[in-house]
Image 1 (cartoon, rainbow, N blue to C red):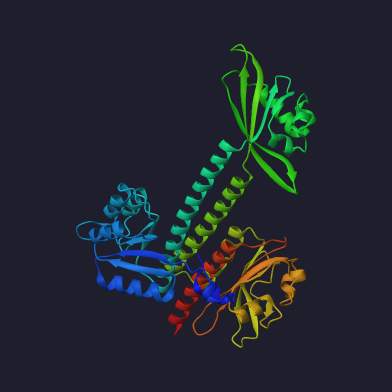
Image 2: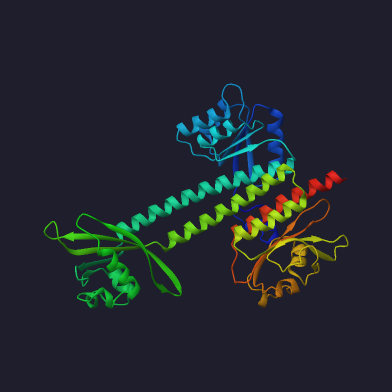
Length: 445
């Protein structure tokens, strides 16, 4: 979900942007808290539209009349508490993402909320910016999670329809594994005609590795025993292809296997989707953990060191760094980092002008993504990056009170195209660090 800031940073005219609003229902029996939350969310996150209800009963009426992308509810309310409200929604078949936002933090309440189907449980209190940043992140994450689940469900239904209507790689082979029948998709996959496949031993068509694996599996198969496994086929266009292979024995006399029906369903897209979901979940968990750390009031340096470690792990990169802008604004100090050579963290300096990626990020005031530093034309890579063989990376600003605190970056020695989700993750971490920095600066006066 893109905010107005994203489009502004990328110089996209507002009228050309398909701006999507998030509709949120916030339920609390304290009018002042409803007012504060709705005003704060509206002013801080223009794409979030917050409607309020002073009781769960009123909220239930609103839910029947309107669609909401997410529901945020207090726990302790007269008449019907937050968990009872959640149960009423779920009993009615409403799967709207639900977040308990309360000052009560007993463990049994948390467990009850999660068991009832709450997506998140957030405790009120602490620094207001960090608190509402966590709430905003929880709202977006819960909505994205539901959208992802719905998209995956839709994808599964589409794949099922395709499998039913359009044949998969289908072959019917004798017990000697000679082809008795293949469908067009099977033949086309191997660059043959259907007629050319008939009578051939599978060994003449598929790779030796796949053939030997199939023979080993068929050795123990018997009548009325289907076999399903996953296989990596020969790469096409340099990319591995994944298949779910189902083998159904055909018993001629009820006890002797005379032939096999082999159905190979390609699941490459599913594998990639699962990998993307897993990566996104890891990123969301990292942001949530850092948010919790910030709320506990850990010192800024500890939070910075935790942040670069989580960034490197969640993005799968070798290098992550926090560069702190010097008081004169002319250079950065490598304040925290992972992957860099010993002795650099706390000592290495990077120019803050447009010749460096960090300096360009500061000037650009938005996320900067580099696919290949070796051919980059917008700026020159600093020695810190070139000395470590960095090829791809991205960087975002860490805000501060009055001026930016610095830059958060992630880099890798492999050529890689970072996704929008990767950028959003890095920005989410930077927002948490900024809130912690501002809070620290305010405490120091």
